Length: 487
Image (cartoon, rainbow, N blue to C red):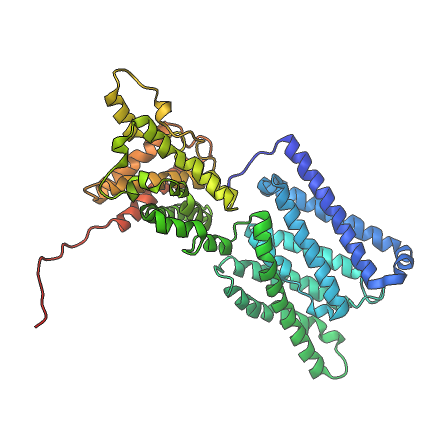
């Protein structure tokens, strides 16, 4: 992920967002305190004022620690107010649900792993582990100082507080590492089964010291509550994740795969009305995925964005070479009109993507993947028809140039795939020379100046595209001209 520099305005906004997040965290704690104690809440509040102050100060310190963590490690999160809202809103939901389950069912049955599953989807792995650890501490502080059985009428025992702390931390780390390798929603159910192992071990071992009477029955009870914790965490995760995806525009692997399925609306339209463009997008997506993986970018996101980079061609599919049969409609048009039609597909693609409420990132790719490159075929055609020099800008795409590494990848993959189709001799040497020239030409025209891509990354991308295209357009043995008939 590209690191960004925050302006003073963005720093101030992010700081205020964290202040508001802290205020709402306190409100959710006091709401849970009120639910647990009802009529006695004000008397207990005054009686345990020291505990209230401790919780307030401790939570403030942890909130400040989270802010400085992201300020040092990943300013991209702070630069997006919606991401801050999302991160803390899920924490409030997790906190309130855990408190409610503890009061009306049992502390061991709380869905303690729900927040770790959600953070694994919306943050990078290291960040998810850190934020989940902070949540574990906040929950522990609340349990011990405002909701413990020896202080108020809550049900949380001392051992149960430590048990939940270990479950959220240890079980959460397991959940975060596992979820990063899960590609389908159905596979998430299996996570609940695996998470049961560390959860039940922690609960049984920690609570053995307070088990009395019928030990067998109570151990079975801990087993059942631990199973409930894991499965309810997963079910909550699967129920709330689609809402988070829609509201906050999250690029989860599940959503990206849904958007690139043949059943997706625009993909289906391309397949029916612009089959050549559809096939081109599939190959570009394959190239983009491999290139993104090679330089450490999000390969799933690159693949999905590549599927939609040429969706604007749906407006006039017959005007693009890959969708034409034998007759070229541009033969009857002036070069200027042809250029207007061809370059309009970037703008039309962005409009279609926004109209269908697809991620804004896809719209950015649609308008950036050609940058400000000239449409050389029609520029050359216009030069032949004119007596003097022409302004090449009038025959170029409007831009902007790529602003992300994934946009740069798709620019290279798109041009390379299209150019490779026109080669008569697709030998590895010719393909390598072609791709090298495409990258060099775009470098000379400063197409990568706004995306902070390095020479090393461009070299890796070039090699990857060459290797991938060699696999797509590999040579085949000629079939013999032999007619066979049934004896």
